[in-house]
Length: 581
Ligand SMILES: [Cu+2]
Figure 1: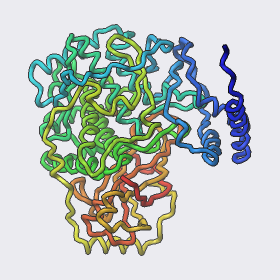
Figure 2 (figure 1 turned 135 degrees about the vertical axis):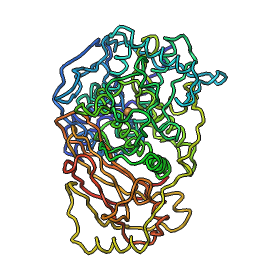
Figure 3 (figure 1 turned 60 degrees about the horizontal axis):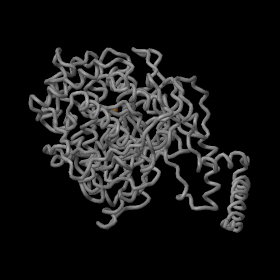
């Protein structure tokens, strides 16, 4: 006997399918075709049948606005949260990346042997009873540990260049995901994907170095091999680990800033100049910088970076640690003579230096530590973030699809970090200015003609920012962070930019990084050429205001100090937002 058909639900489904584009059309004056395309997207699976290598880049048409409008049309009639906007890639095609016109090495960054039609879904979770690999800091490695790391890198470098596990192919993975080799999936196949300046910074790099570690372990025949980390946040780790400067080591790399070799102390706030300060002062600056980036970043967005979903404008804004020490250490290591501080100082070449993996191992550790600092710190639980996916080659040269949700606990991936003393947690910045001086300076700026926005950041610029609301109760402060938002930061994508942000400071004697008034830095490294980048930057200021006893003030004095790229940056607005933790 055949099952009777169910005409009623089918009929309703048909009516809804027909109505949605119509309503969308009425609300947004967009074509039915666009709306149908949007519906198709909901069930669309990328056609990975095409075995396709390098293809010509198509013109950059931003469909996101169109799509978003259609999406908003839906929002009026439907619950938008049920519609997935997680990032998936059109992995069937790989495009030539955007390189600087004066690139020191012409490279296309796409995998040499594309096998896009065949990929596996990641399933290789560590069993709960398995021994965890322990990633150690360079300064605590024993001879055997370092020998393994050096051997692994040497073996990787010795693989044929077209082997997906070879050192050069692994370096290209970073270039491909940073400089636009992959595009988003349909209907955003013209939007280049960039894993920086959004909530993908930490999970992408976690997966990336995880596979790198597995390849190394496989090559040296040690499945328990753990990638070491360069603990630039600890006093013992505040110089380039000496292993990297041994001329006979596979870790040696020529293109580095020669003045920054050991024993020179790393500058976690590096502004690409040679204003060196005595070592003990630099250490103090670094510890306070770490404190700010980890502790003032009290909300998920402040630490992890802003949400980026299918249909959004790319690069909504970086998290605290991505701006510094991530970007700043990249440029600090990179060569002084090369045009964009290659290799480490710019993304198309950064992963060609073996120190990249030690740097990112420590950044990954910062993510693991941040979550343990309490006061409500936790990962995003947003499905669009959790379901977003990337692709990597594993130790058997298999192409593997991974999801963000599977990397948020390092134990799932079989590793943990060795505990290292967190001296920065005990080293909050201090203020050396009196309340009276701060109030006087603020009154002075208040008396000036107000600055007009958008403003060109060509010199030190102070503005008064109104506080619409004041947080009073302890409970309120525990649940909501007061956030300084610098919006519409615009510059050419080929510009290296750094500006510092000060609050209630004195333009005539600006505070140093170990002082409370210096609240953060925005840093951008080269990101392709020929287009404008518009992004934002957020800094938590609840603790700063508490420190200044300025919680009752009606306004805030914000001073922006351009350090690199003076005059290259436009700021559209500065305001205060209250962001729940
Ligand atoms: Cu990096």
